[in-house]
Image 1 (cartoon, helix red, strand yellow):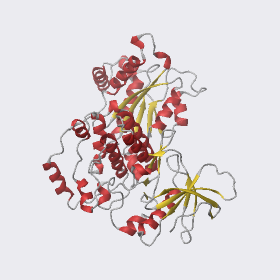
Image 2 (cartoon, rainbow, N blue to C red):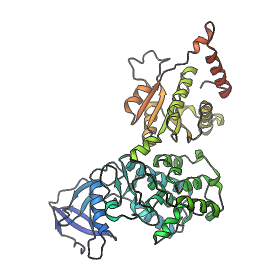
Image 3 (spheres, helix red, strand yellow):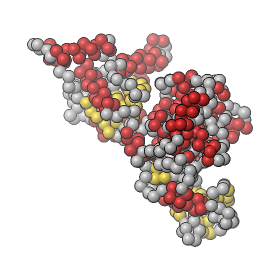
Length: 500
């Protein structure tokens, strides 16, 4: 199909200049033919369909048309219209401002500027948030690469080009038509190489490839052009980033190599977990791989190669189910007007929640007033105050069995506690909030909405309100329950608790 000329009228649109001519499609600026102003700038995407183009071009168009109509949110362009496949197929959508990640990387390279760890983390977190939004809608992108990621001027990422994507609620046309590995060789995940599509952790792998290139300037697996070359990532690890660039911090290498694990189950269980680590590098749990400087031993690769022979990868049934199975659980720990019994009951509720959700992440949060810090008193500086409350949160969590659960601690500053908690939950894709039910100390709570009630009303997720259930008062009345006494002594020894 030849390029459309500027000024051509098509189904109520007027073609403008061609802004991209790729291997799969041409993209044009367009406007309405009746000259009325659109609500946002528009582009038209027209797939290439010449005699030499493969069937995947038209199949990809059908897939993108299918998904663009159902995907929502600020991380995807808004869908406007589509052309008849029998006449002239096209998609009209929002023209999102910004530059692609590939352009951003090229600008850095041209200026001979090496991205620093905090920049890489910021870009990676924005990308992970966008990908998680897609997964929550039961879609997997499956063709993530720098050219398909747009960095919006407001700081968030927008995903482009859904021609190779899959949606759990729609037939996978690419899997039915092509019967082979589908994806870009540089970024394709190991399970995609063997034909498995629909696992959200495949997108986590692609993010890891991009983070690796940002951190080192190199591609972790090169640019293989054959199926055998792509299969090597089923058992091979890339060189550790720190072996290529000495100033890569261990936490960033830890994050990158976890994303690139050959087995999907060994990667981050969701893009939201990845985003939290990138946004909180000081709380990344380091293992040996974070400090690794040598390539993985040959014997390890050999064992993996033997393991992958005949292996059948099993993707999660639904992307949203994978997310729900490893939620981010947030506990709001008060630091004033709180009893020991409430703090204990909160901990027990968290323990129960984590116990039935292996792999869940715990975020322990408290909110303090901005007025608690001082610019003149070093003992009350913002850093000192935050360190004090972080230590208190760690004391509170110490008796919990957190083996197998990534945990982070956060001190928020706000004059509106409920709003701060809700915003944190929204920004970090929290699946459940556990907090005290405020059954003590507030006589007017039946008439005035308390913090827990406000959070329960506005939160984007499930909220569990916990009442105290350990009868501490019985310890001072008659003969106490021996089990309760033993439990209380154990708690005191473990915490050395001072109410805060």
